Image (cartoon, rainbow, N blue to C red):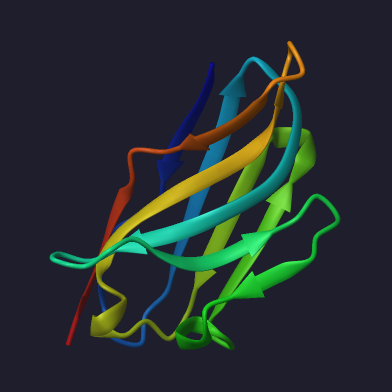
Length: 120
């Protein structure tokens, strides 16, 4: 099994910054794509940003220019630097990691989420 542990969420005023982290552990052979998704109350989970093993990034239009996704392959960790936060960014942010486990099986793991609340 692959486990993900997220950290870095919290309460921040509009215009502020937060940095989310997600560490993957367990039966990992390879990590391919890593990403962050958010889910606001009453809404479906939405893509925020993804990063491939080759560090190609993809962002939702709503966060382009404000959020930056990065990864540290040596630490099996993905980060989300969130700047110029807006109240509409308030949501639970979930980490997602895809790859192959030690038995060369594909996995698609999700973290439990970290709450981000932006006050106006």
